[in-house]
Image 1 (cartoon, rainbow, N blue to C red):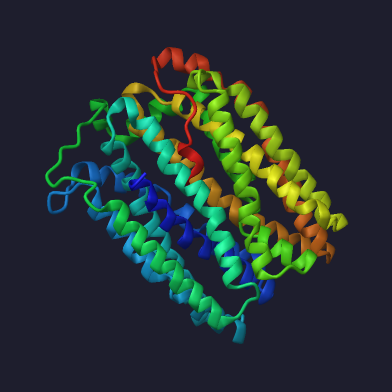
Image 2: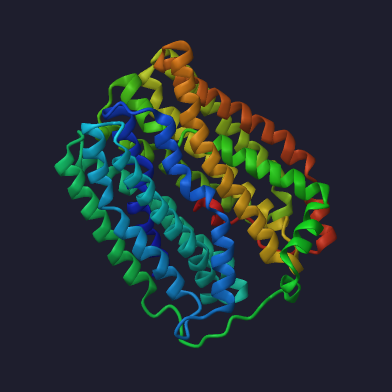
Length: 434
C-alpha cells in the first residue's frame, strides 16, 4: 500500500494534462480538437521507450540502484513540465495560432511523455522486485487499484477548485497537483530499493536478438490476432479521452468543474466492476477469461453507443448514468483482457511478450486519442453540427469494440497457454494503469 501511493501522484498530474487542459483548450478557448488530441497522444506514440527503459534498469544500475534512478529520472521532468501548462493556455487565448505557444506545448508534452515512459515500466519492475513470486499478482493489484481510485478523487478535487476556467485558478491547481504528486512520489519510493540489489533474469532466452524474438513471436497467428485485438481495443476504448470533457461543455454548456467530474462518474464504475469481477472470477485460470473479456467488451460498447445517442438528442438526463455504465463495462473488460494478456505470455519469453503487448496498448491508445479529436473535427467540418461530430466519435468506438469481440474469440488463448505451459494467476488489476 505504501508503494501504491505512488499512483496518487500519478493521477493528480495525469488529469491535468489529459482532462483539465483538453477541456480548457477545446471548449473554453475554442481550439480545434485534433491538435489538442495529438498533444495528448504524444507520450503514447513514444511507447517503445518503455521497453528500452526497462531493459536499461535490468542491466545498467546507477549508483548501485537498478530502478530508483530511472523512476526519478522520469518523474522529476514530468513534474517540472507542468508549470508550462497555464502559460500555454494564456498564450493560446491571446493568439490561437501562436507558433511559440504551440512549440511550448509540444515541448511540455514531449518532456512529460518521455518522463512517463522512462519511469512507468521501471516503477512496475520495482513493484515486481518488492514482492515474492507468489505474491506479485496481489502486489500489482493493490498498486494499480490506487491509480483507479485516485483518478475520480483527483477529478472531484480539481472540479471543486476550478468550477469555471480562470487563468489564476488554473495556476493554483497546477501548483497544487505538483505538490501532491511530489509528496506522494517521495513517500512511496522511500526505502523501496536496496543499493547494489541483484536483478535475477527469469528468462535467459531474453538475451536473444530482439529481431529474432520478434520474428518467432509474430510467426504465430494467435500472436498476430491478439496484437490486433489489443490494438483495436485500445484505439476504440480511448478515442473519447481528449474529447469527453469538451463534449460536456460544447453540447450541454457544462462548466469546467462539472465536466472534470466526468472522470469521477465513470471511474467509480470502473472501481466497482474491477473489484466485483476479480472476486467473481477469482477461481478461474487466466486463459479461461475469454468469456469475461467478451462480456466486458459488449458492456463497454453499449454505453458508448448510448453516448452517441445522447450527443445527437441532447438527452442530458442520461449522461451521468451512461458514463457510470461505461465505467462498469470497462472494468470488466480490463480484468478479462489483463488475464488473457498474462495467458498470452510464454514463460520463456515473458519480457518480450509483455513488451509487445505494452507497445500494442500504448501506441494504439495514443492513436485512438488523436483519432478521436480528428474525427470530431472532420465531423464538425462536414456536418456543421457539434452534436453529430461528437456522436460520430462515440458510435465508431462502439463499433470497434464490437469487432474486438470477434477477434478475441478467434485468438484461441487456451491453446496458446497449453502450448507454452504458461501458469499465471487469474484476474488482476494490472492493466488498469496505462
